[in-house]
Amino acid sequence: MARPALLGEALSAGLLFLCGPAAGYLLGKWLGDALSLGRVPAWIGAALGLVSAFVHLVRLTSRVSK
Image (tube, rainbow, N blue to C red; front, side):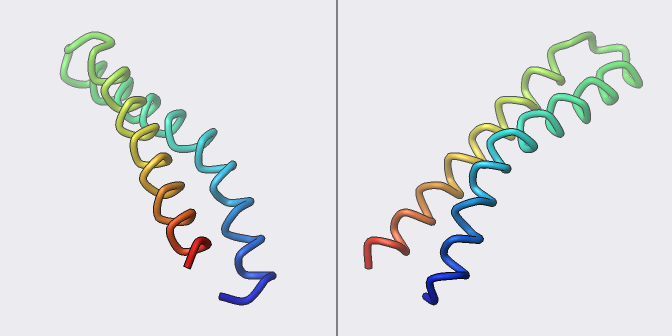
């Protein structure tokens, strides 16, 4: 992989750690309010966003180490 593309992906990984859980939380909060489920979907959405950020980080580090 080219150096600028690798740098861009590494910077996007940091952004994903901020935006992933935030988007999951907000979407879960909206869904919880719409279906009267409380805050549980919001926390599940935030956890899924965080898990997706870690999966992206693992895939990125495996590509870099090759």
